[in-house]
Amino acid sequence: MKVQALAGNHDRSGFDCGVEALNLWFRQTALQHQVKGISRTFVATPGDARSVENYRSAGYGDIGETSVLGYFALASAYVLADDLAPKLAKRYPRQIPVTRLGRLAVRVEMQGQGLGRLLLADAVTRSRNAALSVGSAGVFVDAKNEDAARFYAKYGFTACREQPLKLYLPMR
Image (tube, rainbow, N blue to C red; front, side, top):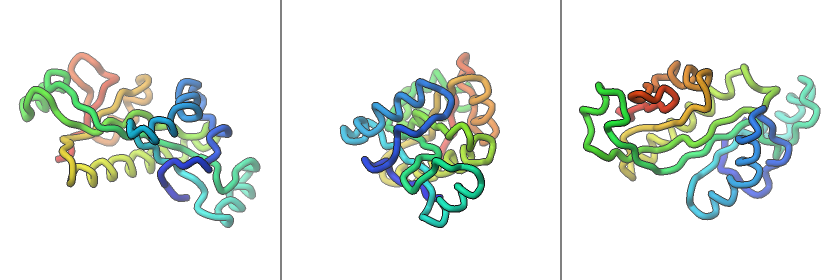
């Protein structure tokens, strides 16, 4: 499997993560936002023809080299220190530049196999690398529900003050 920037040749129409809002955004908006510089979307695809063969022999008959197994989107943003948990807020000025993890989704039949964890690790790594050139104090995410919030919390994200579905991961 490889993770790469979304391009026009990726099969967005075949992607289904089970959440229609995430599917629609990916199919209809992700590439437009990328072209306009609003966000960057990265997709996990089979690495090569041999990987496709492996997926197909494992029962995933509709997967091809351009099939999207999962994706995430990153954008620049800022948050207010008052929104963060008090122990974090005191470290920052009023407005904090962050990298927003706008969306993260995995194909329904691939869920529960660790792909979400790998995509999150890639997103955090890309965010940290970008922060070496452009200021960003951390990664901020709006979890879609409590299950998603627990997923992010497992990897060090802290819920924001009075908003448990908004989570923050400091870069340092």
